[in-house]
Image (tube, rainbow, N blue to C red; front, side, top):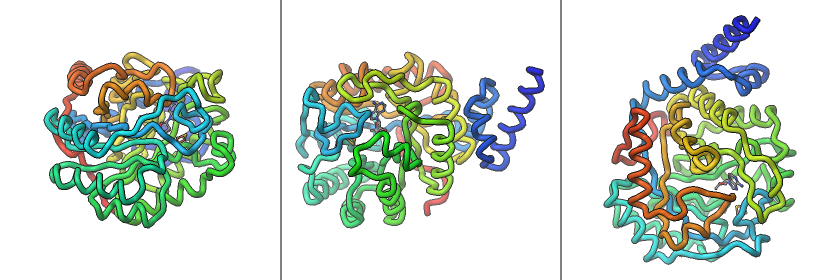
Length: 352
Ligand code: 5AD
Ligand code: FES
């Protein structure tokens, strides 16, 4: 009986690899997969396109202020215990300078939704990074903004934009966010970003409170429709100053299964092995790469602000200098037979 079941699941994995899609029932079956054949096929698919190369992005967490109040996030406006900081343009440029010397060719400016950084201020920051580092990609991850704002930032030199959709299911979205935020607007932002010409990344947490396997399949179908260049997946991890402080962290195996499914669903996708995955398990990021991920995002933020950007408890890498993080990451990647490359790490595929 067990062997029969194994044959069944292998057929479903092969079917996903061949057709790049499945029915809802088949996806649900694969989410529960316990056979490492899923990881083998995902790894093979990643290697066909990206070889054994892993791309590195330098993450600059430039503001811990946020006007939103997402129930899961440690930076939520309602968290009076959060330590808030903002980096100046000069500090951000210094991070990029340091990162460039360390081999980074992509800078990811990430922050809470902080009204201090108006379009004028952001345009100035992006333009100056663009002028200083013509050989680099600039990625923004600063939440929901207007079409006009996204367009101005694109014209100023930003190439990519990360905006996790968090969950594609409207009812589930409402259980994770205050009423004034909406799933529809999130999705609208993502389609607008694509229309403007950004390379776009969406994504979600695995095991966020009240998430069902059906919700995850909704996410997969949404991704199939959006066709982003990148998808960021990490386990939900509780933060002690949020309404979800007593909820259970996301499951490692389920997270890895989703990474592998994404690789087979859209073979050329850029998939990071996230910090949250590394926090959930000491070897989480390595396991992520062995399940088909091909991007890592070491932290480039100044060390004195690191421990103030806490989305969840026990976040790793909060005390290390950027150079230490890079060296640690290089060791980890090499230990599993891969290598980090000095490159913008562009997406290999269609651009529309
Ligand atoms: N656990 C894991 N991931 C989280 N994020 C926010 N809060 C948490 C948490 N408690 C993720 C969200 C957000 C990204 C920047 O971090 O998906 O989009
Ligand atoms: Fe900051 Fe949700 S609390 S984006």
